[in-house]
Length: 292
Image (cartoon, rainbow, N blue to C red):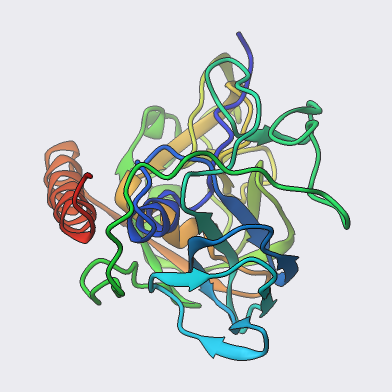
């Protein structure tokens, strides 16, 4: 249909936040870019903040990230600006209640639909939440093994292709051995990188085919572009590799000036990494609450 996937740039942070407040993994939450957020609770509930490093407080008292928090009606939640990383996630027990569009509550701002009237949140907005399905909350903190290993110089694991055969040997060697710098051209659609140029065998253009978050395109400039959650559904540039799903959280937290490297893994290795990660997340979320 030509509609981007959208949803969380950092799916692991979203899932952990939802687990901490007893929501299902697909519940809608609030993605906060760079930080700087303030809201008043209009009813009692649970909350959790995950993702980029930010200072969280209730009525001025610090609350740790990656934990289950409890708020009462009238409490004021503040989230400071990110000191490391880019995107933080606020989950509320019951999940954010907005109309479903194509089966999703996520926002696609470029298209102006989904979420709350298809736009970013603004001062004065009232955010409704659903009925919490799990109420036997314990104060919990996500264990270190579950929290993604964010950093300013991550190594992203990639599966080569699907058009790596259209890149020269020298281009592939540069891509897998040299660091690239995140430019100021970075948003939810794509992250433009600069570094050693990647050379094509016959040019950058292909017959348009499918793209997904994590696709690494190489346009005519020779510099790779990392596609994000709001990326186009098809593209006409050579794709040298695809970032594995387990490393998409690291992509979500890249800021301008950060350095990134790429390391190739096989499809079978990527699958094993995914299954191990999925098992960790499921065990954590299932151990956090009991259904009542």
